[in-house]
Image (cartoon, rainbow, N blue to C red):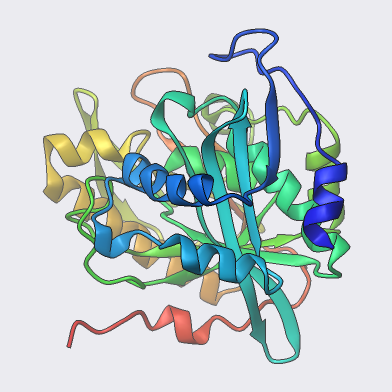
Length: 317
């Protein structure tokens, strides 16, 4: 039933950046075997995964037929991205855990990920589910822009090394620390973001003209910021946390600096989350030598999902 309803709601749209005018873009359930197998290729191309880390199509289709989500982004009927999630439960609360979203590199930055998330939201609301959960690396600014600003997600739980050692180019060398993001589908915050063209904030605007304390600072060596000490005792309703503007560039230049960023931000977020701060905003900059910024606030939100098992991470033993 969900697939049938989704098919009826398909929209054809034009994307200005990188996709020629008149090309057909659709977000729809993945139903045929060749496209299911193509999800393997998309996972390898997006993350450089080995076969061990690739979800087989049998898992994808099984989740889809049992209340989960498996959506594809099609450009002129060619599958170029997919989104996969399955149902989870915490206490009596049913939610969708959105496990993986990938888009072929040549189609990234064109809004396909956002469109797949909007279609995922619509499907879950039809199924009577009002919250979607997923994880992302808090040091990856592009993911934060989509998850926090464009979609309106919030974060109040930090999990250490939840996947253990992962051998792929984007994640190698660092612990797999993650934010656990909550997307409350019917909240005023989310409804506002998905119904309008939200103007995302810029770092320079947050750093000028607003009396918001900054928790941590960095010293710049060329285009590489090195993290400095942090203040863990600020008592204000709103504060800002710096992260580097390009984690992958730092990893290529000096892996130890990237690890320092992981260590200091882990301490910061765990400390302030324990004091009931919530990540509510994210800003980036087009200017050189400026950081990305998270906004943390003391605000009331719906009761959180119990992430205690996630927060402990996994053991290598």
